[in-house]
Length: 254
Image 1 (cartoon, one colour):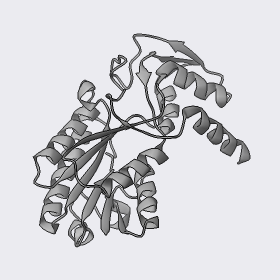
Image 2 (cartoon, rainbow, N blue to C red):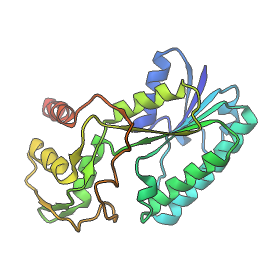
Image 3 (cartoon, rainbow, N blue to C red):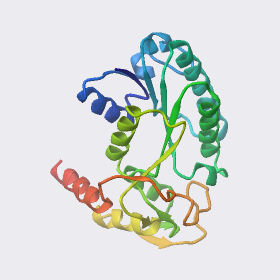
């Protein structure tokens, strides 16, 4: 089967490409670096010729409100139009758990716009919504740092490692389209302050975590439902503590 992965050179995309290639599929890793640009349309027709499945895991290069909206709307329209012309049978897109609950953020408004375009198109689809990745914890801490203090709320999360996300996306791409949303999450919930605290402790970071109920997550006020999945997510196998131990061990080894 020919499968095109949009954003195929990124964190998730490169892992999806590897999984599907190992299973014997013809996989095109499509990104501007390989001559496929969903904003300009460059290379899209050639890349999609003969493709049965398209997986879109691309992310916006700029995150201010208008830029990210322009990216997802323009990319989505161009991609879906090219897919319809190519006769693509399944469009799989990676989105974020809780998107509809996070609309005070321009980024999540843009993701919602992307999802709406997919639902309105004629192409059978599956939207895979993932929780935050373990790999994001360093960025969460950095964004919440003031001097040597990291102020984060105690809101509940259920983060997942990127490897598990990629496995789920690859598997779902080979299933029949659901014309619906599938949620994927890590195996266990954890509060954001504890997530950051465990990361800093494990990496011998001297910063102090302060639990602050009024602290924002990228400008968003959180509650325990904001970032957590519904009642029936697909759960990854990797626990945060295991990932943390492995990550620290790798760092020490290098």
